[in-house]
Length: 259
Image 1 (tube, rainbow, N blue to C red):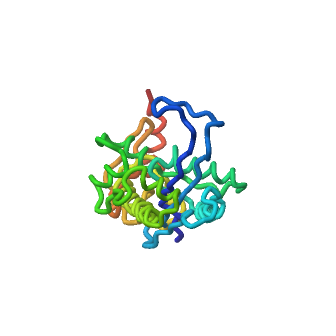
Image 2 (cartoon, rainbow, N blue to C red; image 1 turned 90 degrees about the vertical axis):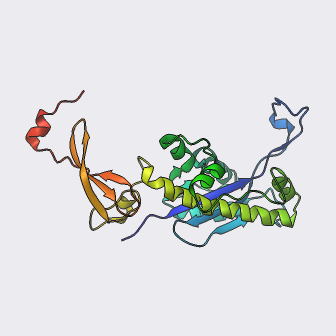
Image 3 (tube, helix red, strand yellow; image 1 turned 90 degrees about the horizontal axis):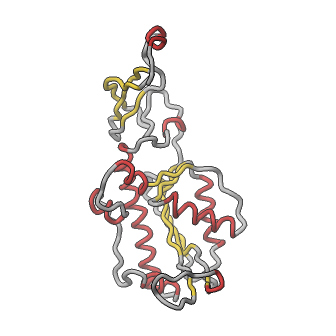
């Protein structure tokens, strides 16, 4: 029984460098830009694996040329069925695709995205949905705070080639992925419309659509406008699901009205 390849991913991008006249409410036109953004580094791990993969532009002669880095990321995404990322739909995945097309890569094989930021906003009312706040509240693995190079200093020192800054960037990037994986697993049973993991597995028995476990417990019925369905709860992740087919008789189905 095969399982989907689920990739937990986090990228770090370089800032746009530009000439500006002031620091507040400044519109930067294209001809004011000195260098455009590119990807500085990425960390990734396959869900459930211990290994955290990391690649960066550290030590490269031309730090702005991220084609080698993007080729490594392309290969991972080409393998992935699902990608987990925080703010992934608006930021990470779109940034990655931009660098792919700019570097001349074709699209990788299609994958689905589970965005933990969007899921946290949709299902809950946390005070903050930032990764640092969510992992602080919910996880044993916390998002790392910057040490020797706080705030923007970490990025500016990496651009200068500071090896200590690059070492901190690696720790920061790797830890983001580890804490993101734990956050995803905490949120997973609550996510409605989660990618149907069981559909990839072709299970021998009823399986959880969120985690793929076949350790399911029947717990009552789910009622919709058109009928009743068997309801299940996963004894592994705690998520809820229902059968695809109604348990109503044909006669009852024919008598039901909707509004």
